[in-house]
Length: 162
Image (cartoon, rainbow, N blue to C red; front, side):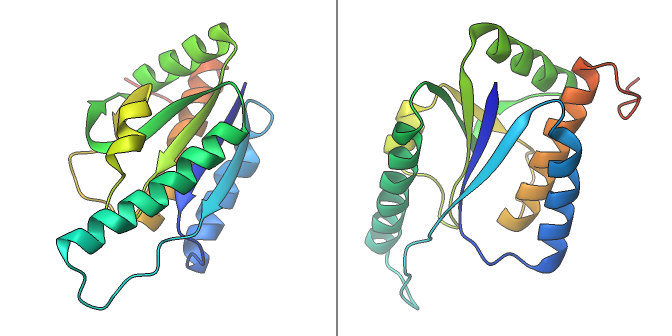
């Protein structure tokens, strides 16, 4: 199984890249992962609600194009209204995905959210937290949680649990 992280935005601060790279390196023996950065829509200084919808639509089309290009792949969208999972629950979902033989695309939307079209195509809508997290931090938290979940699945001592 392979996991691709489809994320809107690029040019992350150095601390984000450092944190992401650390967990990305650690997880590779257990789970092949790749990050695909999608350009954010160009934004006006004072966007209207219509502009925001247009940005989500533009970014959503790029997300769906990247997803379609991969072939057989489940689409998991990070969404504040999605289902919360414990780390153990994530580990179980990853095992299910492996058993089904599908790859997974994990979507981190843009600053204005994810388009309704992307949400409609999602196989899983997952909320990392009830807190609002900055998108750069989400990259690091997501990669760490994937690593932790795979550590559970591989009986690695990283996750000590309860």
